[in-house]
Structures are given as structure tokens and as C-alpha cells.
Image (cartoon, rainbow, N blue to C red; front, side):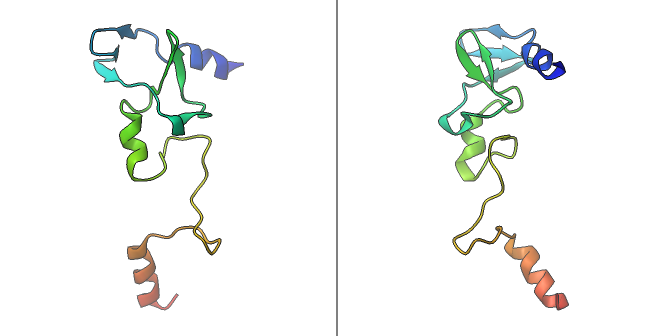
Amino acid sequence: MAKKNARVHALEGAEMTAEGLSYKGVILETVVEQCDGCERAVDFEGKNYCPSYAQPAKKWSHSVCNFATHVRAGVDKEGKVKVNPLKASKRAARGR
């Protein structure tokens, strides 16, 4: 029940301006398709916004948004979890 109250108050004090939704001095953009199902997305006057990140499209442009609650770590074609290549090379050099 505390979670519902947190969602209601997530955009408390936000105002709709000519540029978009202004929240704590930042202009928020509406969420993108990939954000559908995320628990962080909050409805404000009929549109969904993310209070965690102002520009959700940029967060999804390179990879999966790290704020997304509905997506898990990526798995490659072989079924293994994706590993940072720099870390992998360091591990190989140490003999692990």
C-alpha cells in the first residue's frame, strides 16, 4: 500500500508548461514504447512520464534502460549473460 502512495506523489509539484512537463526545474519528456510495463512510469494529465530520467528515448538509444523494472539483463545468442569485454580480458590475463 505504501507503493501506491509513492506513485501518486512521484510528480507532486509538477507543472505543465509550453516546453513540456516541468518537475524540479527539469523538463520531462513522455516515455517511449520500451518503457511500457515499467513500474516507474507515472501518469500525469493523460500522458506517462518517468520521474527517474527526463529523456527516456536517450536512455534506450544505446541499450536497455538501467532504471527499467520490467527488463532483465541481456542474454546473447549462446545463452550466456553479456560480459564487459574489458573485464573479460583482465580476467583472462589473471588466469581465471
